[in-house]
Length: 434
Ligand code: MTE
Ligand code: MO
Figure 1 (spheres, rainbow, N blue to C red):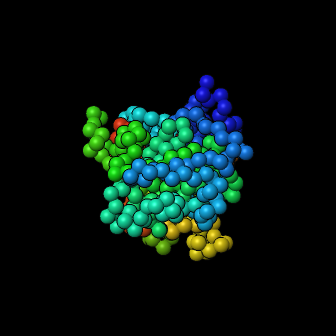
Figure 2 (cartoon, protein in one colour; figure 1 turned 45 degrees about the vertical axis):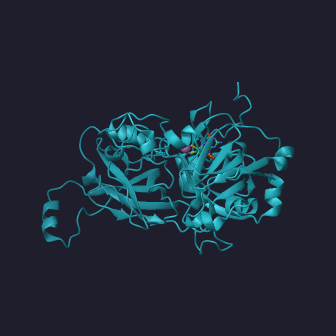
Figure 3 (cartoon, rainbow, N blue to C red; figure 1 turned 60 degrees about the horizontal axis):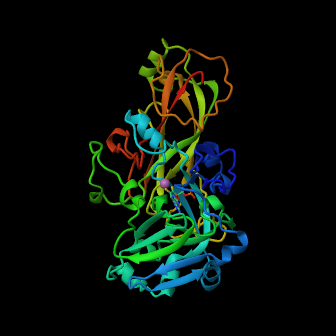
């Protein structure tokens, strides 16, 4: 059993599969902390977890093959002593995050692990810049940056045979912050997250952040692994028998958001309509008690490519009206300052958001709840006062990034048989007596 030596995991992780280990971060843990604790960081393993003894880790060997076939070797000790250490705060998000929402929301099955909203986490990574190491190995970073090098891709290989690649430009971009990381939130990388060395490619799909890294190859071509050439690509909703070569591998991620914690509070009395609106005030005479139910929502928003989140919109009435959520200022003061939790040149981290409001009684629709996506990991209703009959509404969140990318309204339009990059508005149904 190749998995016999896998590490023991935190019981609060939400297990999807045991061999190999795949587990989501619990919703409350995502809302509660900007940096996900190491033992609650989501785990996505395709195979077993390689073991490197602690007293051997400094001798862990990284080999770098240049285009002419020559090989440079660095031990982890070399990396730690020859190069300047950098910190980069960055989200990792699996391309399958929210795949279950795509399956449920579109009514069409997708292939792959049915993740809900927890295949994403945020950490401060410590390591050395890939660009510094490539320069030392003899690569001309300028040529990689301006496109004159024959090297077009940097291929990463992990010890258990996982592999992926990124474009050379991202690898050597002085603003790109690609790390060879050995630390995570101030501690050595945990075994599940690549001990003793992994790539961190901020702003890109996490599939490119290869764990247990022991080989880098500079090449004219992408990695030939199935994870580069097949699994992590998207096709049109009509396409199920596809020409894999025609679609580019996923690199930068699209804009995303989710509700990860939801708390329904007490019923409160509120005027249904402002008295200053005469017509409405007249109608409200005939209407039943104009109360509403307090609600507190929180969650994350994130966009790839270092694009910052500028706005998060919340609706408590199935999308008829929207309000802006409060964005938590985790990265203040200025990113890069020693007191900031954010390190790096781009907006590589998630923005956590919060919303406190009242769901007016009038928006709870009568009748049986329709079937919608759920955040089964997140809902923790409070005990409420006297329950009225079961009436439901849909709470929604959507985010916008700095170039005004926004999320699609439904999963139907972006459905793809691999269930990659599910990023439609996140919907959670709540009922008046929940
Ligand atoms: N690297 C190796 N060596 N083996 C893997 O299975 N999985 C990839 C990537 N790097 C993987 C890997 C995928 S698909 C994801 S989403 C991330 O690692 C998950 O990183 P994490 O487990 O640290 O959250
Ligand atoms: Mo992934």
